[in-house]
Image (cartoon, rainbow, N blue to C red; front, top):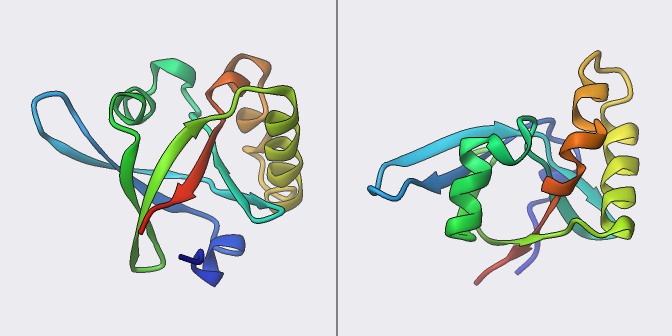
Length: 118
């Protein structure tokens, strides 16, 4: 399966997660693409609801420009992945006043790589 072409240019996607009692949530996040790998990160760090729910159930769906894409979330807290994600955020969101909030040291460990599922 290939990623939607919009993923590199769209500024936001929705990540669908499910709570332990079955409630479905959608949270808007910033995706970045580097070398074909897709990264997301929790603005609220490990305290973020969507991040906690995704860690409990890493098979989910992202919504990109009206398209539902099945994905599997893989924790990517290693130095290389964090650097690639940071570079992607700096390229894609350089003009955003919120860029600094997504590259704060305290949330880097919530970097996730999304892998497509069929």
